[in-house]
Length: 324
Image 1 (cartoon, helix red, strand yellow):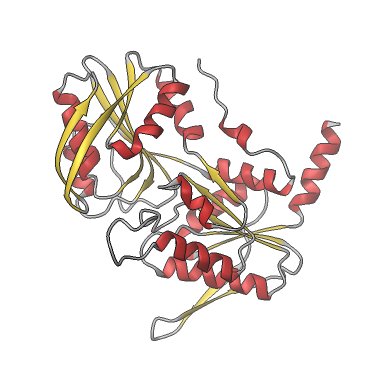
Image 2 (image 1 turned 90 degrees about the vertical axis):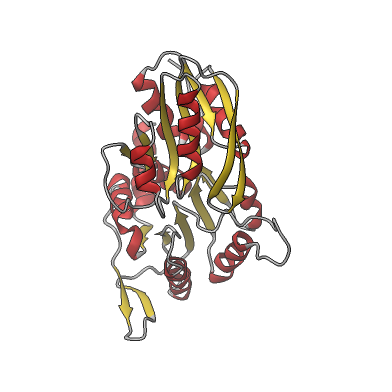
């Protein structure tokens, strides 16, 4: 029975093509290698005025095409993804799956003030109009973005990568923390899996990317604290939270985030913050390395999900954990 199942998986691989946008090729190569096939050949022709044209350099007619591209800045990354999807549709691909490790603009998921765009919904519309038949992503900033799509969305969780890493650290007096009230659910989920407690850092913003004041709700005295978040952007919130936690008697503090946006003064702030380490993933390439930053790869997870999608197998089972 196992041999038959393996043969079916091998046959499915013959119908799969994996391609990459230019700025996510570093990750796509690892995903294709984990999946067991060569990364597909595509090129991007650039014109002197900055316009560009992606094209596939191999036949994709009737194939299941997975296009891997994070949509971090600049916006060209999003435009390139849309054009690759459109090109695949016009080349008669059977299914077109957008694999977006970092779904940019996800923080604009609602109208938080008058006369602004709901950019996450706009992008969902653009992807659907271009011809996407499925979306695979990890740790959306807001879960409800899945509902912006009328095609299936496989929403993955970096906890399946972070929790085994934490278990290997074998920290005693472990407790989780959220750098803001919006991440309470995330911290609570980690705490439940690891059978421990969590605390909350309550912040007030004077303006975007700038924290005015912060207070701690909960006890961290003599605890090894893990701050969990989906995104670190300028690192203002999480470094302020780390300092607040240490000021309240914590033994150590670590930062865990899925998407290392790391803009502005993020690197300087993390270097001067009291972090033992900052653990992140490779959904966005680091601008520079740091002894404090540990990068865990998502390649194996994405490859496994692609394989399960092709074989019509459960994905939710990947996110069921057992504590040691």
